[in-house]
Image (cartoon, rainbow, N blue to C red; front, side, top):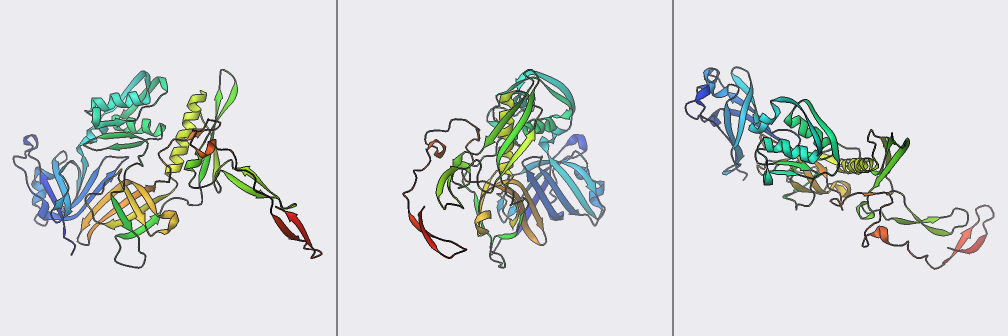
Length: 406
């Protein structure tokens, strides 16, 4: 028997707003939704029953009031999370929206300039201003310094998100930590979901694919213009052979005229496309770094799915889950990008937005022409020619058989 879902909402005493003691609003909850995203602040939406209109005269639902929110199944509740009330609508049924308290990073618009710093150094400096330091600020280092980096009429949250997007990093912010960097694929799955279409005994209620499965980019070519040298600078990023999703580097090409076979090298994985883009970056190192980052982003977005699963209060963003029974193409490990918890009279479900973690992800892309590691298949010589094998070729016009070798 599945335990009943429960929601607990307690207001926080705030004398400045006239709140002298905390009030429990749990018995008024009709519908509860908590959205946990790695690219935006957490948001909670609650529908409260108000048939006696009492809540309209209370300060508990005024903008700026702070709630402690938790939810779960039976006694397995999440830890309390502080939310600030932002909007209130309705009369007999109130719809209240609150944001996580770290939304303060997204309230004040600022304009300033940073000189001679890398983007990661700027992000670390801004994060420290809001108390995210040390283990609470996990920001991946970048190498290229810039003469100036401008923050123009932006909140700090939007500024950090823009800098992260320029490096093709993910941006994750909650009350515990700030994480900016490539999506991690090294964690073991915290949950395994089984897709059983047409049956009611699976833990996946709905599965949808949001990406174009026919498009796989295996190579990115980035072109920029060097104004000093007055020439076009081109940088190419490809996946290393170990990361090409099982595609072999060498293949046998059969001549249609002679029937003979020769060994050739692939320039890109089979069935993949080459993407060519212009860029305003002028330095060769910057163009190469941008090509690598673009390929990482395209590879991360190759397979994106949305899952509706049975309620589980432990599901959060940046967790790794595994999907089974959804064909060889879709089954595998996924990184959760958003988790939307919904509790109502119909029950408790979680809508997950996730992207596929491909095999071999976690290693870096390599520039074209770079020396591969010694243990990589790229460093191996092409396979030796196979011994000649006699075969019979039939002439389609005369029907005669001619013996040849392959």
